Structure formats: C-alpha cells, structure tokens
Length: 144
Length: 278
Image (cartoon, rainbow over all chains, first blue to last red; front, top):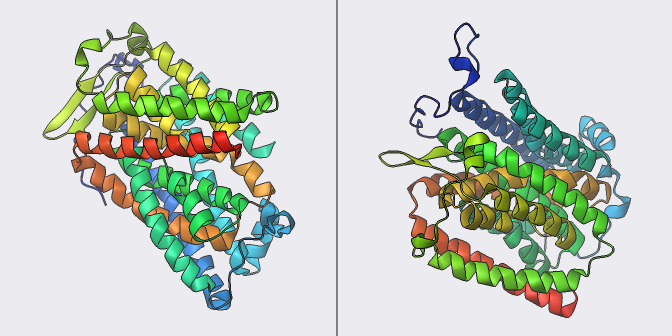
C-alpha cells in the first residue's frame, strides 16, 4: 500500500539482543511493522462491518427524514456491547454499524496490548511496566 | 433532510476533518463537532459521540502508515501516554471542584500564546536547551525519514514534556476537548522534537486517550450508528490520504496549518469560557 520505508539502520542504542547467546528478539523496527499492521487490520475489519451495516441502513431508511436534533440515545439498546452483538447477529443494520464502531474502538486498546507483548519480548522491563500501567488505566476507563 | 443526503454530506465534511486531523496530529473532532451541531443541528451529545469515533478513526487510520514509515516514536508515545492517562483520571476526580469556565479562558490564552511562539518556532534556534540525559536513559531519541535518508534527533526537557502531558490529560477530561493540541505543543515546544515526529506521535496517542472515554459515551447512548457511520468512513479516507500528504509536505506549511487550527480552537475556548458554555 505505502512505499517501502527505508530500513532503520542498526539500533542506535545497545539492546539486550546484542548480547551473545541470547535468542534474537524483536528490533524496534520489527515492533513498528507489527503495530502498523495491527492498526491497519483493525481499521479494515471495522470498515468492512460498518460499510455492510451502513449500506443496509441506507437501503432500509435512506429516504426517511433525519431527526438528530432530539437526543434519544438514552433509550437506545445499542448502549451495551452484548445487545449490539445480538442485534448484529440478527441482521439489524444499526447494530451491525455499532459492532463495527466497537471494533474500531477496540483497535487502539489492542495496539497497547500488542505493544506490551513486544516490549516483553524485548525484555525491556521499564517499558513493560509503563505499557502495563497504560493498559490497566485504559481498561479501567473502558469498563468503569 | 433524508438520511441518504445527510450521510453523503456528513461523509464529505468528515473527509476534510480526517485529512486535516491526520496532517496536524489533532484528530478530526475539531471539525466534526461544529459541523454536526451548527450545519446539521445534531444534538451536542450525538456530536460528541461522533467526534470520539472520528478521533479514533483518524488516529488508527493514519498511524498504521506513520508507524511503519518510522515517523512515530513509539517509546515517546508510550512514555507520554502514562502521563495523559493518569492526568485524565485526576481530571475526572477533580471535575466538580475546578471552575471549568475560568480554565477554558486560561487555556484559550495559553493556546494563542503558543500559536504565536510556534509560528516563530524555527527562528529562535538560539534558545534550544541542551539534550536531556533522561532521553538517552529512557531510549527516547530516534530518527525520522526525510528525503534522501533518515534524520536523527534527541529529546530535550523530558520532565517538562511529561508534566505538560499530565496537564493535557486533565484538560481533556475537564473541558471535553481532544488533547491533541497540547500533545503536539508539549513535544514541539517543550521536548523540541522535529515537527513531523510531534504530530505523528500525537496522532498515535490520541486514539488511546479517546478509547479510554469511549466506554462511558457508549453507555450513555452518545454513539448513534446513523450519525457515526458516515463520519467514520469519511474521516478514515481523509486520514489515509492525509498520511500520504504528510511525507512530502513542507514543515513550514504544516506549521502554518497547525497554527491556524490552534487559533480557531483558542477563540472557541475563549468564547465557551466567557459565555459559560463549558
């Protein structure tokens, strides 16, 4: 998709994998590639689901007049992830879109989790601790 | 207006929001909220929900390219995410005791001053502080692509950058604004990172900040599929295109666009603060 990036030259700082006898671990360049791919996959998956739901939504309600100046969200059943999932399985257009949006929201969370795994593979304890803290606070925010 | 026409117009406007958001590192919310509320008379709560979706879409859509091309500094991103997420929790905890209107006015003034300084940015090179040894210790130094090769850089004033980021997290919790602008300013002004590294690393982080509050907005019913779907798709296409524009873009030009957006945001904050609309 994008032009090939110039390969990052050898790591500028001495890393654990430079030591003899250690199994080869991920370089920062590898981590960047994997994180980039994960973000891309999350966005593409979410888009496919939203496009399907959006098309169905327009096919069914496209000619109806909009009334978004009145807030009715408080009574929407799409406020919970489980109800959204059930609705999407039953082919409800709004629920399919909402499922795609939930996938989109989950993408940065998955990115932080993957970064945690990557720093763990690099045996970078300081960054494992920092990423674990970010992930914990993020999950508290999401589920509180 | 029919839903089909609404979706078409909103998607078109959101395309512009994604493009601008990806290039400046500020996310698409700055354009999406006024567009939905002023032009389409959408309830502010729906607009805020759609704005949240737009920020995550801009962040993830553009970051997939920025990270792989080596613009984004992942370590700086994680390091500063610690500050913004802690700051956001603190902000939520003190929300009842802080006078938000006064804060909005103060923030507006700070933004205007930062915009002025940012425009002068490249001229006052004499004031560049020495490299911070903490940057080496935390492995924050890096390099970024700029034809024909990669340009190395070192970070400055790591503690100040971290402190400003704590403040950024608090502000976004208190004022309900995307904290992208404070993120870019902290990296650009305090830590003296190259402008493209600042904007792309900010872009990388704002998705996480937004995701942290997504659960709350979802449960309150702020995210409506009929409004959010054209926003998300439009913003995504804009963000992916924006990521391509950035590589070849002139930094002087990028700075001007960024400063213009900051000025608009500053005026909006002053207006909100003075009229008590926060």
